Amino acid sequence: MSDILWADEPIERGAFVGSAVKMSLGLGMLSGAAEAIAIGASSKLVMPMSEAVILATTSVVLGGLLAAGGGLFVGLLGAWLFKADPTRNIARVLGLVAGGLAAFHLWPSGLLVLAQPGRTPQAMAFFAMPFGVIGFVNLYTRFIWRWSDRRVEEGKSSGPSWLLVSTTLSLMVSSVSAIATSSGDYSAGRALDSDPNVLLVTIDTLRRDHVSAYGDSPVQTPNLDALAAEGVLFENAVTPFPETVPAHASLFTGLHPVRTGVLSNGHQLSGRYPTLTEKLGNEGYATAAFVSSFAVHRQTGLDRGFQAYDDGFFSGVRGLNEIRIAHLSLRALMRFGDPARYRHFLERSAEDTLGRSLDWMVAHGENPFFMWVHLFEPHAPYETHGAPGAPNVDHRAILADESSVQYGEVLTTQLRTLYAEEVAHTDQVLGDFIEQVRATVDRPMMIVVVSDHGEMLGEHEIYFNHHGIWDETIRIPMIIVPHKEGYDTKLVRSQARLMDLPNTMLSMLDLSEMEGTESGDLSPYMRGEKQRDYASLLMGRMGRSLSAGTVLGYRAAKQDADDFGQMVKFIWDTDSDSVSLYDLATDPSEAIDIHVSQSAAVDAMQSQIRKELGTAAPEGKGRDAAAIESLRALGYVE
Picture 1 (tube, rainbow, N blue to C red):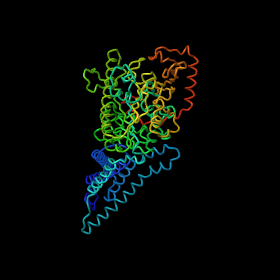
Picture 2 (cartoon, one colour):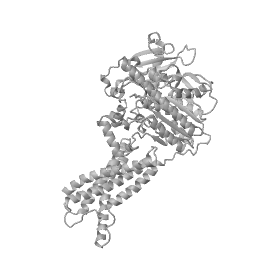
Picture 3 (cartoon, rainbow, N blue to C red):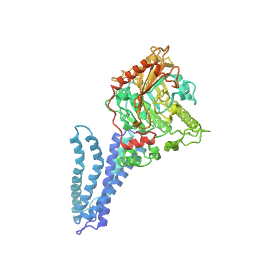
């Protein structure tokens, strides 16, 4: 072909290497285009055509650069090793480059398959395929070029340049990819026109006592208060585990984290546990999620059942992490660099997340949908969002060197103020979003707003994290705004759990409950027909790392209570085998340990904890080292 220098003598070394690079570049662009097709077919990202084109083009460019680099290396090696027959030599180079590209994409999948019991033969097929690619490309290249050479000898055109052909094909294939990526099917074919929409909002790290609907609060939250006045406020809602992924896994499965094995943000939810999303999807709902933090990235398994799962945090090229070479580069940055410098790869603002979810509603709101929106603002590090008079303190810098920080009265007060500013900002943008949703979507809608856990702001000498199982982290705000009449109880005092939401929501939608869960149905409480305090096993970590130890507990109704929602809490540090017991009705700050005088209650709660631990599932599959470094950048350590 025209971009190869043919001669009877061995090809000149520089021209040989240049040809190898050009031919490899074309091969890599085709590989990048093929990868873009795969991304378009499997991605759950929600993006317009323009962003999909950018993603596909980036995949083509990165694939071409990767292969060109490989062509340069193999070309230099070939120019030194191979002394004759330029056609055969170039074919060898392209075969090796093509085999390298195949191995780059296939061998990681082979390793995943190999890790599964009984699938060694399938894994070996992944490992063997690149060698077949080497042979095929080698033979095919020699055949095509000899055919082209014969055409030249016959006085005919040798045909278009390989680089022109590969570029044209790459553009055509990447265009198909962009169309596939930007035209996801969010159908709700089996849903009824009368079915309501369901909007679930989880606000990461929001303390119950910072929502003014609950009473005295250091910050006013008028929009959350308005939702509470419109719907039902749960006075005593608790999370079973004050950590993001375990809590959200509990919310979607209706199971305690002990029974899913998801015990940290570094664990993945197994596919063996059905989710609320899958249930609603099977009922015909369109399902979409828009999340704000890598902590709930699709690697956690929380994406199961969602047709759209928008976790593309990098605003430059959304979905960049889907491209393998970019993914590996980002992993290297997180693994060997300073992850705190790359937080824009790991989280996004509430405005961005809510804006994308609203765009999706505008495009697909004619169908009944279930949408989950996750907001990350109250989570550390705390920021001012331009609030006038906010403290001039850099929480990011503090977290970067927290071991040397002394949390005195002044700094503690400043950070508490910043946390309150985060809550106020979240309330404002959420209120604007709800108003826009109601103006956009003309269909009855159930709204559920809840937190996954709270935050310690210096209480019990725990500063600005959610360690332990004190009530500051365990009690959470929970608000349900029904989509129909009949729920007249505005305040439910009974203790409710985060994992009670799935069957509660399904019952309110007149759908059958999820099987195999421990989720209760709170809808009778909301109608004033029933009261019951759901006791809850509690579990939390003692420090940033699981290796620092875990603490167990139990929160249950007082035996002599004269009303619902009067609770006692038992805390058991299993490492030191120390216990404590608090009467929360008379001692809400958990300052007076009464376990010595309540030995029978202590024995009963320890026995109940042991019984529940006996039903524990195997610990969930862990995420990779790069993911752990990314979590560390967000303030977690596994």
